[in-house]
Each structure stands twice: as C-alpha cells, then as structure tokens.
Length: 103
Image (cartoon, rainbow, N blue to C red):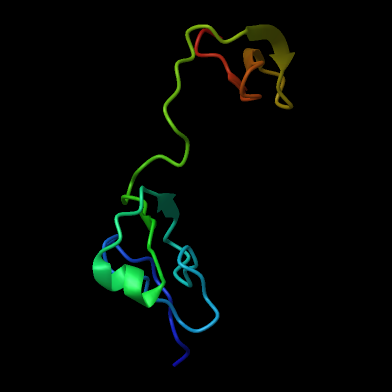
C-alpha cells in the first residue's frame, strides 16, 4: 500500500507527512486544509517542522459566512426551456444566479 498523508490535528507537534509531501498536503480526497495559527512545541521547533493547518470540520461550509445585506441584486424575468416563466436573482457581488423564491 502506498504511503498516505493526512492532515495533522495537533498544531503543537512536528508535522508528520510522507516523504515529498508538505504540511498542507493530503491524499484523502475528503480532507480540506484549514489554516490556523502555529503553536509549535519545543519538539516541533527542534525538528524544524511546524504544523499550521488542520482538517476542516466535517459538514463545515466551504464558503465563509458573509453579510449579504448590502449586496447589489439584479432580478429579471426568464423563460426556462420547458416554457415556464420565472424570475432570476443575480447577486452582482458574488456572481451567484438562481431562480428567485418570489417567482
């Protein structure tokens, strides 16, 4: 079996990775690195490796929460391929376009 690198959860210990991998590398496709402040222990400082990434919590949103109250929103009528008429909502700040709830 090939070496597998996963993200460390302890930022006080030296970073443990397979040869050739960096501290934020992972071979687990379900893991996503999340940067945190480094808090290296004496052991980590002596080894010369510092871990400052941890796995993102399971179920955590990929996109940070943001205040959309001041976003510029554009709405316009649209006809779907099946002939249904809907109102589209386009957020000019994020680029997100969706069918408006008020269709």
